[in-house]
Amino acid sequence: MSTPSETAPAGQDALPTEQKTAAVVYNPVKVHLETLQRTVAEHEQEAGWAETLWFETTEEDPGGGMATAALEAGADVVAAAGGDGTVRAVAEVVHGSPAALALLPSGTGNLLARNIPSPIDDLAASVRTIFRGEDRPIDFGQLEVEREGGEREQFGFVVMAGLGLDARMLANTNDDLKKKVGWLAYVDSLFRSVRDADAFEFRYRLDGESNQSVRAHSLIVGNCGMLQAGATLLPDAEIDDGVFDIVVMRPRGFFGWVRIGARVFWENAILRSFRRSKIGQTQVGKRIATAAREERPLRYIRGEEFVARLERPDEFEIDGDPVGEVVAFKAKIDAGGLRVRVAGPQDQTRNTRRVENAHS
Image (cartoon, rainbow, N blue to C red; front, side):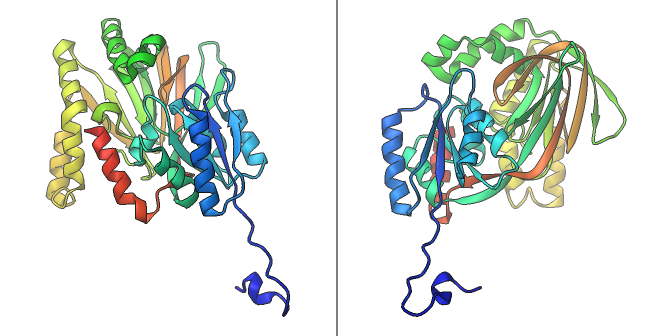
């Protein structure tokens, strides 16, 4: 294909290359705006992009309306500067559009950034990715939840959604304590939630197969596997493999919870590393990994569509945000449906090392 300079008549300047535009949707509580704007301006000018567009979230709108406005203004990349809630709100809108999502981690969890992985505590590296990075297709979760009165709502998610203990834990988290000590506030909430965590009964259907009945304490449908503090909930989860990884927690008593804690905070990370090793890629290694994954307190399954109906309403969470009680939900994966801006080859190794250090 000819370029503008090749087709322009002699003596006439070539047509200017159209500048790309970025937009930043930011939570004013989570970011230092002056520093962020200064850093964005430096990298924007170096890359030759147009002036960046800025949209501030509100308590009433965590970012969806702002992301919509950014797309309408012609943004090629929409960056979410805030916590997991801001990222999810922006991702719901960017999903299916020609634009890409960029991450400027500024919250407590930053789970999507941890799982891609992207730099967590390096603002300059995160901003550079907006203008110098590449687009990576990842899977996007689509949810329909049903309330007790029969009302239905649509949501999207990029990390995980679930009900039971984890949702009750989020609903019980003290917001003031979370501001002071970050993710450690969830530990306080966890102990309060476990005491009240009655098991629930539900029926589920995976990929259109026959219904199964289960009694459990937690049910989580995940697109990513890693949590804060190096915890690995879903050791087989990959962000772009086209399937959900689903875990059902059904411990018996206190020692059942201790066993789950050992798996999540230690053994699953080892299992994940083993599965990615040369030995883990062999048939024998795969059989070993499968056998190690099977344990009664935790049941793992995988699929593209998961439907569950509860015997009674229970708390539900999406990407770390409690959304109230539901009686049923359907999760369907859109494989490669969201494009996320990631570091270019020159920055990949350096950023991966930073993320690994943050996990340790």
